Image (tube, rainbow, N blue to C red; front, side):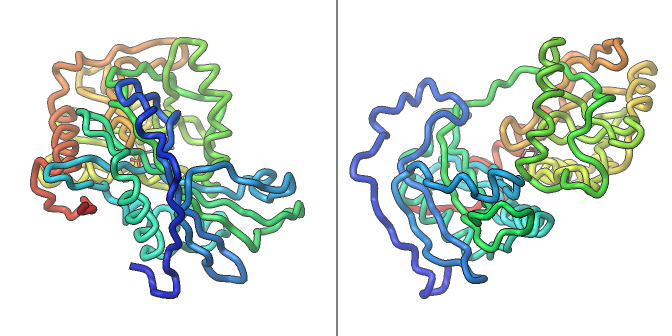
Length: 357
Ligand SMILES: Cc1ncc(COP(=O)(O)O)c(C=O)c1O
């Protein structure tokens, strides 16, 4: 709970959009719940926490974030469990990651107390927006941006932190074909790739568009220096099963530390699976494919938990990966993770934050 001096003022929406929302045909990120949480950073402290009807922001064209990209965000989900409970998956881990992003972009820290209290009260008010259909959830988008009205390049003095939410349907559960990128980079060593900062996504748009034109839904990013080592798969972390070992690129300054990645590694280790976090070259993957030891490749992220990779294109050659039906370990881990998020199995890692209604 936040201190009594930080009581959240609440202005309820006069008319809910709930009844006019088509929950049967939800499109990712197209519909927003009735309310949002906002709080301002001013004179070196957080002030004026509010929950108010979801609405447009009014800002000066000189707002710093619009020019220099001093803006970060998070993405997490709430699910409807049994007994009318709302279950939020690992919100404290997302808060910690947001603060790492904030530190790198010279932005103020958000206390876990403030983050959790805003999130708790917002979701309590909009609890009816958490879908109860199988596979659906409430996507939660915390964001922080520089709000100085000043166009000199410098860290802003004022910031706005907002949380808003969006009911989302079951994510497309198909496979993806990926293309190894050896021209563009999304992030370089020493840059901001490990931060969930808007600029990283802007850098990925053109290469992603060019890849899509060639028939690939995702890019397999490689390191900025040599284009030799695998970094991430689109907006997901990448994992490979080589024989019986789960291998994933070690975290670095250019890789986002995925909460799903961490959750999958934790479950795999609990199950006695050998996990290696290390550099993986694209040559090693091709070699493993050629000698039959590459059993699986997949991306991990909040949106789809895991997305199997069906084919990898490298230097104009495409390799086809094993049939999805043979990929039992990743399928089992994804199911386990889904069961934990929905409260169907024991939350032995203390990942689920319950909002009792
Ligand atoms: C660049 C990038 N990598 C990895 C991930 C996966 O992170 P998480 O599992 O926390 O959703 C995401 C999604 O948030 C992402 O945008």
